[in-house]
Image (cartoon, rainbow, N blue to C red):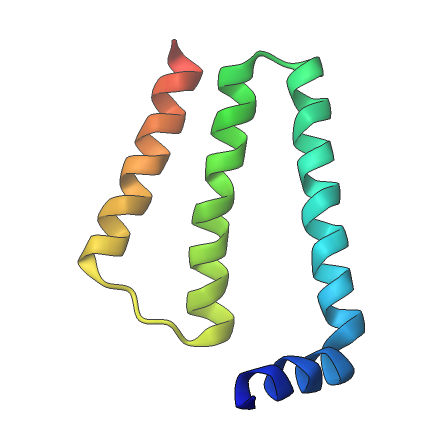
Length: 88
């Protein structure tokens, strides 16, 4: 009973934010599908992966997330993969 009231309360308080996030997610997926029709798939895939790097940077800057060596290593792997795709 408590969980259901939390969900109802969240819907009442954050309905528009939730719908905006859902719309943005759907819209971004449509953009990716459109990009696949315009460019070779490896380039589109690389562009999608760079969003992880941007999200990590924004998390550090605006949310105060800590950067651990594991995160830096992962970002370096992503950037190296993008570089290799571009060079192929």
